[in-house]
Length: 253
Image (tube, rainbow, N blue to C red; front, side, top):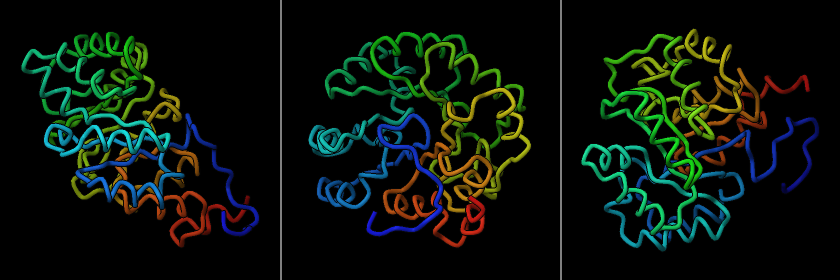
């Protein structure tokens, strides 16, 4: 840090297992990635190349290398997994992970319908190849799961081999664990946390109010995902209580 401010919450150090900031890259250029890493690389733990943007991204291998050379793992969004699974291309998907030397993969079923046992089987198989992050929840606003179902699904996916489970919200933050207004479904989150260790969950929270809510609930080292590149530094100040939204929350430390 550039100078000393006393009595700030202690942040975990990279490589982090808790307090993760997952960034959503929706199509940055190589130059933009370089600029992003210069400013925010120290506060970024993992980067998702959103949904299936990797299929159409120019210079994909060079982009991935930029992140990896900075010590930041990269993975393809779960929609790519779904797009290939629905077309019977699981083996092709595994070869793509190897081609780009990826060490993480996302398994999701937010856009397709498959039996949960089948999803867990994919998690189990992929966990022998890479570190798996699985996503729970649907991108369909009409599909609302009861809290017990979220817990059941998360437990099964962790047992199948997921390193972390993502609580779905989309990049817009208005489905899954949120109402269509973006408001947190507080009762759902409270129920999930009675059964699932908070360090095992990455909460998708693209909106500032959502980030503030989870920091106030869990603390500076909550795992937060779907962060826009421009929001990484602002998020870090929220975590440390040096932005007005969380300023009072950490003063008693």
